Amino acid sequence: MIWSKHSISFQPASVDRWLRRVLTAAATIAALIMLLIVLFLLYESWPALQQLPLDRFVSDASWHPLEAQYNLLPMLTGTFYASSGAMLLAVPMGVLSALFMVFFAPPQVAMLYRRLLELLAGIPSVVFGFWGLTTLVPLINQWEPPGLSLLAAILVLTIMILPTIAVTSHAALLAVPREYLQALAALGLSHWGSILGIALPAARTGILAGIMLAAGRAIGETMAVLMVAGNVVQHASGLFDPVRTLASNIALEMAYAMGGHRGALFVSGLLLLLWVMLLTAAASWLARNRHA
Image (cartoon, rainbow, N blue to C red; front, side):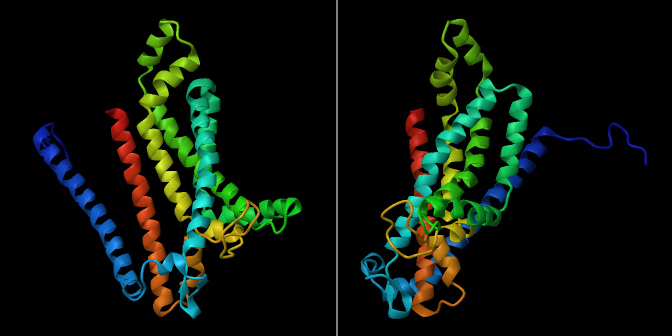
């Protein structure tokens, strides 16, 4: 077949309309999927929410579903401690790693380091959990038994979410126009002064988006935490105490849950979803106010 220069012609207006329709359809599908997930969780949680007052989920004596006790507070605190501890460690290390790649490392070293981070981000969570169970937990056990603990969960989660923060922060910092930094250098501002005064503020939206993605993964992580945290329903009084998170509790008990027990587990899933949505809303509000 012979193609002439007139056989295919693209009109810019028609291409724009086609792209707009594709993007609108993709956004609509994503919104519908999110809406269906919320509706499904509400539908499955509704029997438990109708039968049980909301205060029962934090005021019951403990989590004993067979005895109609549905206190979710120990799992809420376990989830909060594990995810917050991981974020406290991973955020500064991730941002500093991105700064190193962009502003201090030679190009070859920065590229190799980024590839290693991307490889780390692609490792399945169960592999992190297996490593934590066979290597990290015995080390902690030598320090303070039993090894299966909040500390093990924090360290495993830190390693899991660090690549997300580092890679997204790296991309955000690369998007900062080099002319800004060159102009400040010409004015005599130090290298660190340019980074702190221009690069980080200009890239804060992208960095914040990466932090929120990492926070969502830390809150919802299941298998790795299940394998190293000990899964004891209690309020942790220290880093070496075993804990159970909401996501781990769902994975452990959903297979045999029935009636109110099953509904309470779906309430746990609804709480996790609302938690992540609140974090996302808070991040959006913070970004808007900083830009203002």
